[in-house]
Every structure is written in structure tokens, then in C-alpha cells.
Length: 624
Image (cartoon, rainbow, N blue to C red; front, side):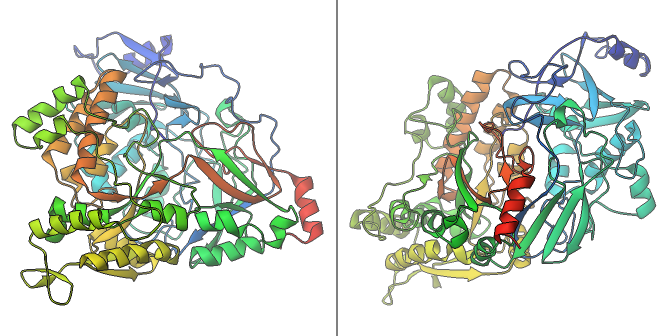
């Protein structure tokens, strides 16, 4: 879902806040705006005095349990650290200062704050915090906690965050018990600064000092926060249960009306997806987001579904399509040659996979902004060429980028897994040009080394997809190897760059900003959970800056088109598939608003528990 931003009103309270500040500089003397939210483009959907979000049921009952599954193992409750494998939903007890909604892709609203005050230059931002927010132990949240939390992330946050954000914030000042000011560096992208401050997750300074906890170390329990749920119990590698915080400060504020409806949220762990599906069939958990097309097409004929105990539903998804793909490790010299990457990509037959393995349920991923107007299409517009031409003149991009259509994956024959002869010839020619020649044993070598490609995987669910891919590579003279590892090994090897090809999911927003640097910038290539490809491209870096500098929506769209076009031309991925619906199955004891908002499925957010239906299921023996 897109990261949010936006809005404007006036307030005398802001002037009072400024009187508490140090003597005004020339910049601080600018006219200011005070508002309940902010957006870079357009207007906020919700006014300051809204009663509840449009998409919730304000009368939704509270109670009951919803349960889901997770794969593998966990040994920590800190997803902010590189150490350990974090438990599912470990951030449920935490909240950030500002929030977005599931029906406003550009809006960012005060949540732990009442208003924000800022000048037109956005050189600084003052957050007027609510005075009724408390942590789960009942202690009040203050400006000191906000300053502490923001600085904690800058000191102990993961490297990619500190690399991107550390130079963008000049100073964080406490102006009063519930007022905090963020001042931004001149080079900080002004479209990002409200999100930088407002996105701060707030911790209790006193709790951190008392416990000695660190943000960069694994933990056996979540950090204390202000959120609606707390850790209730944990059975390491088997189960996690979160329970409602009965003293949750925000239970009745407009943003939370009709939300956080379950008493408990339980996560059951399984070794793999097949075991998890069997667990769902027998009622070990109650809600399943189905990501296997085979299971969705053929698997839901088990007794509980036949008897009507289990509901299957397709829910429209208005989000940008997730760019699911295999990605290359560009730190390995073998994969630094784009001809080799292109040849490998030609051997994945999506059309056959979709027809034979996926029951025709998917579309091919073509763009990093799939299913949105940010996707590059056709040849570059004049405005795009204006951005691309200087990069061509400097030799950073080929001239063809100015005239060619945006790169699309090849369309192959759905009737057979192997690509046709023309595709094999094309791939073979690319490899020959790159110096990989076929030997007497049918394998390609260069300088005596065999061209080998290891697929790092952690789920057997992908075997049926990877193995045909490997068969096609073998016909090309490439040795493909499927290596399956457990979750902890998988996490460590992807982080350290010990792989050839690995699955990745690119989740882009409707308003691309500073997060692009974590995904694609050269400066994050050495240590990033997003730039797994280790992409280092000056052209991409420059286009990211064009996106960050865009001051109007049409400029943002043009710059994103150009960036998308270049990223696809880099061939850093072998794009896989997406669908524009959520496929879900659940035991018939949950209800949801109709329609569901475009940018969230929301089962843990605004769905609710039907106690009477749940009792009927238990009476029928549907659930354990």
C-alpha cells in the first residue's frame, strides 16, 4: 500500500507552541500552517472532526479470536534488528505518531498527535502531541519519549535506515511536555520529511532505560508501546498469542471506532505451506490468505468446506501489484553481465506455468509499479526523454532507452514448458557473446568454470515452479540447482548475499519517496533487506533523485515512469506473477464491511467476530 502524506487548517495553538521555541530564525519567521494531517498532493479525505473511517462498521462487536499461520521458526520479538528471526506481528503493541487510512493513498493523519505545524519550506515540523496517550503500563507518553525514539532509530536502527535517514534530520527538540520539533537538513527530500517525523514509532524512554533493552538486539518479548494489543503468550517456534490491551488509550477515538475488534490474535507456526494447509483443514487456525493457485483451484473441497463451515472469497485488491520475482545477486561477477541475466530470464516460461501450474489465475508482473498509472508503458514520453537524455549523453544508459518500448517479459508457448527454438537460439547467442561456450558434456563454461545457478528457497511449495525452470536451463547448458534451507539460514544468506537467485517481493507505493533508496540505491547495496540484488547504478541513483525532487503529481508520475523503465531495462529480476484480488478462506465466524476498502484486506484491523456463528461451528464440531 502507498505510503501516505497531506493537509491544511489554522490554529492559534501553533502560535503558542512557537513562543516556546528558541528565538526565531529567518526561516522560522515564515508563514506556517497548522493541521490535523498532511498531503503533498490534493486534499485529505477526512476532516479534523470525522466520526469514524468510512469503511468500518462503527457498531462492530468486540470479542473472539482470529488465528492465522506463519512458516518456519522464530526466536525474537524485534523486527528492527538484524539478530534473530522475528515472530509474526511483533509490532502489534507499537504505534507511530501519524497514520494513513485504507482509502486515502496520499493522506497522512495525526494519530498520537493532535496537530502538526510547518512552514511552506518544510524545513521543520512541530508535532503537538495528544496528552491522553499512555503506554501499556499506564505511564503517559511525552515529547521526551518521541525524541528518544527517533534518536534511538538513528543510533541503533538497521544500517539501511541509518544510511538513508541519518543525514536528513538535523535536530529533534522538545519544546514542551507534549510538543516536539523536527528540523530537516537542506538535502532532505521535502516530500518525505513529514513522513520521516510522523512515521516515528514511539517507545517509552523510561522503560528502555530501566530494562537496558536495545533496538539492535534480539528480544524474547516485544518492546513496550502504546498499541491495542500485547503479547499474551509464546511457545517458541510453535505459537504466538496477542491479547487485547484492556487499558488501550485510543480505544474510543474516531480513528479506532470499529477497529481492533478481536480479543485475541493467534499465530500457529508450521514447517511449510503444505503442513499449514492441512492444519487449516482440521481447524487448527481460522483464517488463511491463500497464495497457492493450485490449492485455491483444487484444494478447497475438504469436508469443512463441503459442509459450509469454511468460506472462500475473492476480495478486490486496489493496491499496486506486488512485484514478485526471482532476483540476481549482482555482487557475483557471473550475474553482472546483463546478457547472462537476460538469457536466464528467457528460460522461465510464465505462460506454461500459469496454464499448467497456476490454473490461469495470475497475470505476469511487468513493472515495479504493476497495476497502476505509475507503470511505464510504450515508448518514453517527451517529458521522460528529457530526464533520460542526459543520462544517455553521459554514457550511463544506452541510446535505445529513448526509443524502445518499456521492456516486457517474453511471451512464450503455454503448450510446453520448454521455450521454442527461437528463444533457445536467442538465449544461446547471448551467452556465447558473454563468453559462455558449450562443452562436450553440454555444459557452458567460461575460463574453465561451469555456469551454475543456485536457487535459494525455503518452501517446497516452489519446487514445482523452480524444477521446470531448471530443466529449461539444462537444455541451454546451464546447471541449475535447487537448494532449500530453513528460515534462519534463508534470512542470513539473503542478508549476507550468499545466493545466486532468490525470491523477492517489491512493494511500491503510490507516492514513491525516500524508500526507493532502500530498494534500489547504490548506497544501500552492501546491506539492505530490500536491495537484495545489490544494485549499483548511477543512472538509477539519479532517477531516484528526480522522483524525490518532483514537486507536482505529474512530475512524480513522469519521473517514476522513467525509473521504472530503466529498472526493467537493467534486468535485475526474472518477473513472476501477481493477481488483483485477495484469495482468502476462513471459518464462517468472521464478518467484514462491504465493500472492503481498496488498499487493505483488513482481517486483523476492521473485521469482527460473530459469536453466534462461532458457537454453531463449535456445536457442529468444526473447530477444535
